[in-house]
Length: 219
Image (cartoon, rainbow, N blue to C red):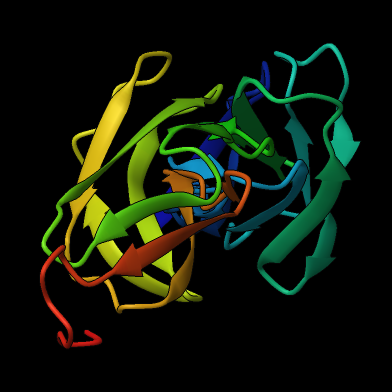
């Protein structure tokens, strides 16, 4: 608590004073807690911005370095805004929250990759024939704007074997031998780190008993 006393006197020597007593409350200042977006890769271009800022009366968000600003909707100390961005790219969500006496900035970077991988099965050919003693090599190529997380061989609608050692744009291999003695439907499916997935064309391979066997396991 503080007191200011002001004194005044006139030419005759009279003196008088007045006093004002007051408190100074130091504010804790504004802050922005960013709940979303997160620093990850999204598979959708529709981005939900959600922040909390106690004491703020208004918050805006920008995705192009303040060239365009969007007023966020507030519920108490929570502020949100949803925007469909126009393209896949790396972005920084910049936030500015304010009240009558101060303002604060914060930001979060993220990436959008909404396009699925393109997967091409190179070999074997459709209707190729093997025995159940063979190890079949599946050669394929995958391209994607983002990062490939893994690819897998799908056999008769069930994922049979997976590999995370995948290089985009070149021939990759997955080997597999545990086939049933039958016509098997197979294809390659690939996933990127944003959660997008796509598969190659489906083919059939016929698996028979090895030559000289009249009976063998059907897998």
